[in-house]
Amino acid sequence: MIMRTTIKPYSWRVLLMIAISMLILVGNTLAAQTSDENGLVKLEILTVNDFHGALAETGKNPGAAKLVEVINETINRDADGTILLSAGDMFQGSIDSNLLYGKSVVEVMNYARFTAMTLGNHEFDWGLDVLKARMAQANFPYVCANIIDRKTGKPVDFLKQYVMVDCKDVKIAIIGIATPETAFKADPKITADYSFEDPAKIVNALVPQLKKRGADIIVVLSHLGAWMDQAGNISGEASKLALEAKGIDAVVAGHSHQIVSGKVNGIPVVEAYYNGRDVGKVELVVDRHSRKVVDSGVGVISLPYPGLTADAKVQEILTVAEKEIAPVKNSVLGKSVYGLSHDMVASTETVLGQWVTDAMRQKAGADIAFENAGGLRTGIDAGNITLGKLYEVMPFENTLVTVDMTGQQVTAVLDYAIRNKKLGMVQYSGIKVVYSEAAQGWKIIAVTLPDGTPLIPDKTYKVVINDFMAAGGDGFTVFKQGKNITETRIQMRDVMRDALEQQKLVDFSGDDRWKLVVSSEERVVA
Image 1 (cartoon, one colour):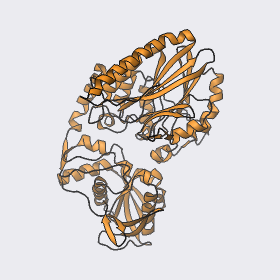
Image 2 (cartoon, one colour):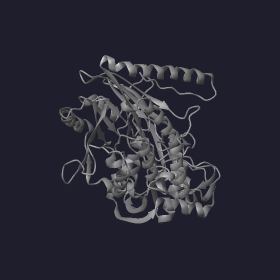
Image 3 (tube, rainbow, N blue to C red):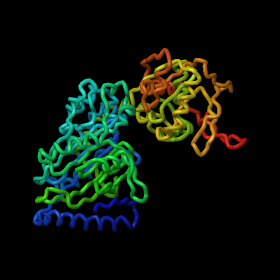
Image 4 (cartoon, rainbow, N blue to C red):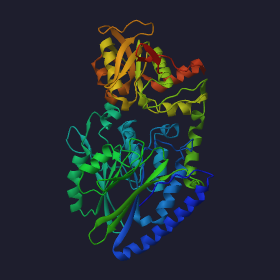
């Protein structure tokens, strides 16, 4: 079995863990040498998910060069018996990747010898033309079986449903699966022509076909979310697939940015965190005679760890790309006094969310502004704010959209937001909200304008949102009920950039637009 280990620098555990690791490696090598004599063969599946363009080594992100070094070290121990898979969301998320539309990421993936990749929801962010350009650049196939063209009723013609590879004379079928959440997690304008079918239904239909084609092992390479509790219990879409699919041998997960390594229904399920901080690893032992998996293990390799070096070739790729984007990336736009904190899944208003929606409302001349929490990807520390940081905060090419909405519709937006906390609390400007907590959940008590005037249910207000929300993204379909929907074509990132350049010094630490009522008292939450 593969065990997850976390090594803390400069502790006595480091030497112990290195020694143990060496013993395990020697044992694995001997096992690989002797297994074939017993009619058994060991195969390894390495996985990466939700890399989000984290090419540079920053903070807790090890960067592409160190990630590939770990991948290469592992593959080189048994190159003939190892495959490398990506569970999607590889490109979008950093200025290093975004300014070149993911080209540098694919160049790194080609060098690392990825076997296949499936689509995450963010692969659609730059539109189909860019996606197809990245596919054409890749030396590996993109696989996804559950994206159906609504016009034809068949799988989309620009993706393979699966790919078959040979490892040590064992045929491995790799089925790609997108999360059905792509329908609203990606820009609905881009995905409107496609349906994202039930994963188990699609997999169960393909398994018999693949078996007839000679597949010995079937791996589902998915962007399905997974979670694992302290007891090792796995839940989420990937767990559901493992329970419902028949005849599969492993599930690779993604999307939820979690560390998952365990079994569901006897099937290994792995998810390797995000931003290249972990590498997933599934071991399968196959009986050559029965052509079946007789043993399996699952775990993750944690990065970075002491002594880990950077791959020179990848570093060269990054250096060339960095020179190309440096003048734009490092330009300073302004400075923050306190920092602008943000959490994508926060259940309350965030300081960054308040500042951004204030800027949106002012730019559009609107009464009210809304921004989905996931549209802002990270907070801003105190100090200088560069354009590079702005790209980290707002990696998407979203634009402002204005819409006329009644007070009742505005309240419906808030109500939907507090009932769907997993999306993160919607960020807003131009209103104040008072709510209470009960066993059934949160309840809105009052919605007022900043001057205390109550929001009038049948009065019309000018609301500004981003185009993702206007299209019903994150399930905010109430915006489609508004009138006079107008695409301004003003980039969200430009709104933030203009605000920074005008203010120069951002002296903002949040306000009380989000209040919790506790008995007869009010406690400020934001």
